[in-house]
Image (tube, rainbow, N blue to C red):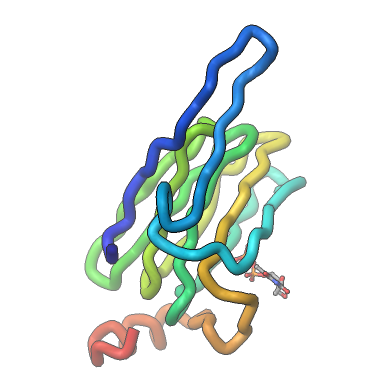
Amino acid sequence: MNTPKIIELPKFLDARGNLSFVEQEKHIPFVIKRTYWLYDVPGGECRGGHAYKENQEFIVALSGSFDVVLDDGLKKKSFTLNRSYYGLYVPKGLWREMENFSTNSLAMVLSSTYYDANDYVRDYDVFLKMKKDGKI
Ligand code: TYD
């Protein structure tokens, strides 16, 4: 799968509170090697100005809301995440920014690779050149 996609997860609505879950290779198209989360993001801050060469992600707004802007080098698309029962599948090779974090928002990110600083492309011009040359 190499297009970004909002994926709706199972939800069990209950007077005691709701429950959702995600299973690797069933709801999302990869094995989960890593989970990280973003929290206490100050108003107006942006995260994640980079692309990954290999890593795929699934991003869920466990609390609050934020926007994920994806860019394939030709066009940009913005996804608003504001429910804990769906998330955004982000294939490898896209430039991504996260912005407009609401107060107390909590972003959970499931990743297909272990952390590897060499998997990041952090320079947008380099990213565009790599796209043009089919290297990402
Ligand atoms: P970074 O990926 O730049 O954050 P974001 O994409 O949210 O803006 O990561 C910030 C710092 O955290 C950077 O020094 C690398 C470190 N880090 C890890 O050590 N392990 C991880 O799994 C992640 C995502 C980041």
